[in-house]
Length: 140
Image 1: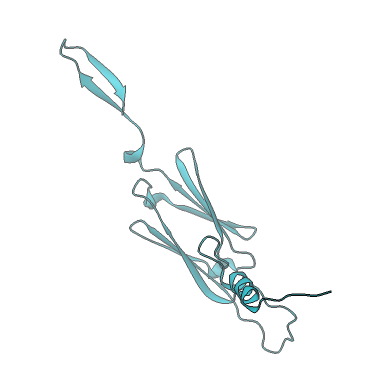
Image 2: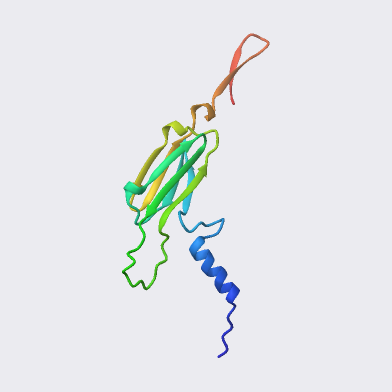
């Protein structure tokens, strides 16, 4: 049996596993969606001590930081694939979200951020005056 190896393909595969890609970061994968009047984002952070989690909001940018302690150098590791040390991820939010009311919850290795849609961004009715003097409300 002839086996072909491509060292560049193997190196590319290893690099994607360790560092991730632009579409799928390896360190802090995230899912995000809108649920009614709220925006929800979940970050996978298994094995992270909740005390090491930190979150900052500046204007419309949320920065999540976490750390996983370095391994004991005395261990003879068979595999060490999880990232160690401090890592972070930024989430750029639209102007339509209310960053003053962000809620964060860390449970079962998942950090969930819930951000309400700002009142000014919600649909509202605007009255339009008609020439005959009656007013009629329409959706904006």
